[in-house]
Length: 169
Image (cartoon, rainbow, N blue to C red; front, side, top):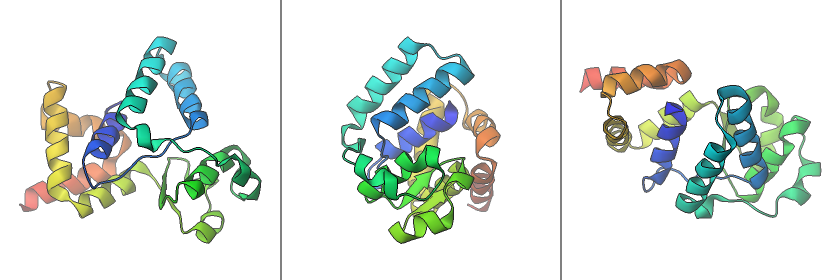
């Protein structure tokens, strides 16, 4: 969950990025959290309600008619259709193989893993990203180093970028 927390905190910061979701994506995320991480239905419902409250403008609608035209993996065509409808530039996913470049290129969309995505945000505004992470660590009552140790599990390249940057400044 530290990675999801980091991504949401960065999205809440001005100028960095606007996440985009659909009801279908949120159902899949909630199901995954329940089945693979033991999160209860009540917890996922609360999570979704908080995301809707804080990111009301993030919901994409009217993408369903685009799904048949998508050429990426069938189970993720709804994701690409929503990205096209939202005029997104990036699809953030661990599942890069389901979003081949040939399927994304006509829409000028790229697929990025979380580490690459976070490194790109860091390059855009290092001070903002560092401040957000420091606030995240404080909010959970942990040290910055502890937060990095947790993030290193899912986004090691991003953490190495941060460590290198801190050492150079």
